[in-house]
Amino acid sequence: MVVERIRQMTVEEYFAFDEASEYKNEYIDGEVVPMTGGTVNHDSLIVNTIVALWQRLSRSGCQVHAGHVRHSVSPTRYLYPDVSVVCGAPETDERSLNLFNPLLVAEVTSPSSMDYDRGSKLRYYQSIKSLQVILVIDQYEALVEVCARGASGWQTHSYTGLDAVIPLAALGCDLPLAEIYRGISF
Image 1 (cartoon, rainbow, N blue to C red):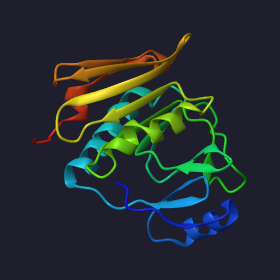
Image 2: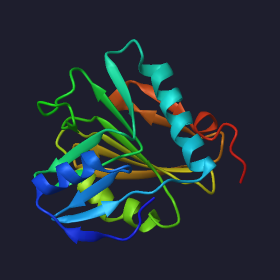
Image 3: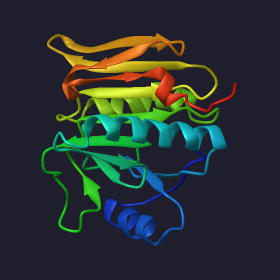
């Protein structure tokens, strides 16, 4: 969930601020964007997605990460996706604070972040060279928008309803919406 932006900082100032902060902060071209907590459903959707991906990928050489790993989108943009997957060795900085090579990222929408998650943040993610799949998971209905990198660029498909299954060719598996939305009441 995003709250309002705060003061301008250099990248180095941001790193020090973020590491000392009690909450996560994203960084976009000099602006720090504090991230707040979410609802019980928001958190459950993150956990369900992590578990479903981990069950499918645990023996594949891929790692599933929760939203505590900062991702480098560019030298002036750093984001915290709700979920990410790295296959093979993770590429990080010397302190393992910034991840450079996710294959998949997922965002669970919130009322305050919905437009950002589907707009600017989506475009920022699309600039990551290693990234193949972006999931935008709706918190208020069984709906997942999937942006997948193809030969002709990024393609977006929507999957709705608990019977829908998302094909994740880049990861060699499928992801049922019934598992993402397990235990969620609308």
